Length: 315
Ligand code: DON
Image (cartoon, rainbow, N blue to C red; front, side, top):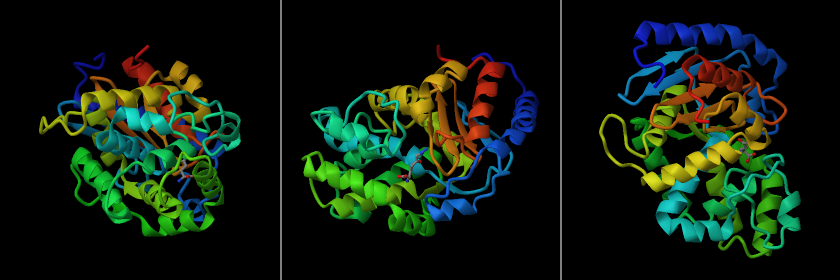
């Protein structure tokens, strides 16, 4: 990688300098409030962790602060569905194409004759994917996602934030509309409220940027844990995830982000971004003030600057 030869001090200095430059931009963003519990976050927070493929992690800012994965969890419901059912079953309920629409849009679900959500990174697609996760009950299905995340992060304490989960569950009228539409059109099999519950729960899993960068490093390292050498995710499924991160990971900002940063990344409305630079490093970002597309404003800018500083663009 281009930053090979950078000393630990140089890495820390670069991270601190970029943080100082981009942090003020957060004042132009807004924290998400459509899930009331998320409105309590502090818009001044800006934390970034970088995990190299030798397992070393460098952090700046509030890297011990916990926040919920929200849409970043769509990567892990996809991974578990792929592991459980295989790609043919997964892509029978969800497509592979970007939408150009907001993440909770309903418009294309009716317009497309198959009624299949266009990809697993939008809400409808992630709900469809969650319906494929097998397990005796919702707790058992959630446990598969949590177990994978704990192994990837090397952190046994990862858990659901129950307050955020309740808050989302009580206010998820749009997601219910998407799910019941998909039930009516035959995309969703099974109990709609159970499928939604699993979706709300996995969105409400809490992490720090250090967890996120460690998890991202596994994706960057083709599914292999950088320290233990264990293959935690099949390389083929890690590749599918990174492809979706490029085309749909930043919602209808994915094209601009590909040009400006060129790093496979997935954002969530709590302000997190998970970024995986193939065969180089994993990055976790947290800054809760969002731009109008629902991506962390300062977080995306940080990744653009870091990409330029270390020549991380994959294009
Ligand atoms: O379903 C929702 O609206 C949230 N649980 C997740 C949305 C999200 O993170 C979109 N992100 N940028």
